[in-house]
Image 1 (cartoon, rainbow, N blue to C red):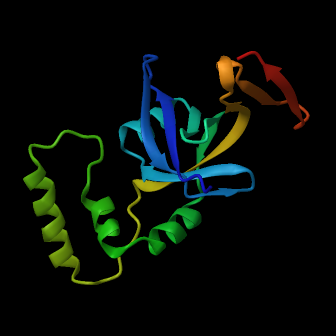
Image 2 (image 1 turned 135 degrees about the vertical axis):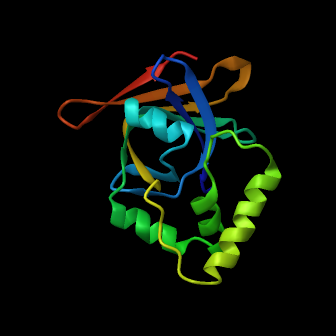
Length: 172
């Protein structure tokens, strides 16, 4: 089963948690990769505090994976490559959307999209500077499997200073 949907948790500068669902776009060199608008709420929160939590849930299988780690911006070339692979209309959406900011109406954003699509008229679209990837380096994993009588299996893997992983079993 391919994991693509994950819950990303960040923290505001005043300590308030925030979660949202994002798409895992890949795992490279052990890092979880996702893309976003850097000026969005999550982008702004990551600029202040790069520590995150990721969760994957498979309800039917009664399994969960939780990851804690540190996010860093992907190199611009990596963001450029991924942006170039996106559908044309998604590129326009990324250019015109002030993600997470207040807008007056849906009509406002639809008009901006129509205007930009007409203005570009099929021309190549460059990645906006405020849009790109984050790579999350895992520092802790927890694997959870539901079991009968709530005697769930839980294993935790914690990255050590020597880059080895300490593995422990947790009580349900």
